Image (cartoon, rainbow, N blue to C red; front, side, top):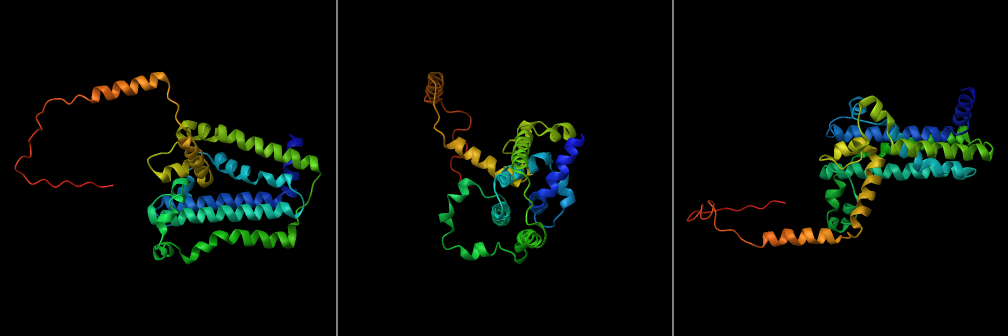
Length: 267
């Protein structure tokens, strides 16, 4: 136990910027959720906390994206954290804008349809609020703190490798098996990893980062060609053969004869 405590203390002391960045990205995830779950009327973070089935899952997706930090040297470690934080902040901001306009979150399919935005600049700008820039506030704060205090203390290479291996392994483990969801809320993994009827529920289950990773996974899965077995082909052929025969007129035939009928099709 003492060895573990010493490792944790050394890890936090030598990777303070990494720890703070992970915490700030997690907080930004909560802010995004509080905004969309409460229909953009308030930032009810405390209400949002109760909607998260697995905190370990949230942190795991963040840690995986930032874990390359341990394999870099010198200033590259800090710049990697700032750049990744900036990219994620832009992604969160686009999610907020997209939610304001469509009540959903940006996906691979919607990115491929950006051509539909032609000549809609006024509508796009109407989705932007002046306070949106606050999502980047933590980056400026961390950069100032880094310049003044941190200057990333480099521990021996073996310690950094162990930190990388441990953080990545635990993150993957908790993504594969969100243990806190099972132990605390008795929620099965299958209930988390699914696209639900509501985008709000899905993003709450998976986290904002996990939502997009899962979206990319589903997109790739949908784009893969479907290979039908001979049994599948027979079942399809049988289904169509049964549908080819048109039955005789039933009790609804001629029901609206000599009446004005208005037919409305809505997409």
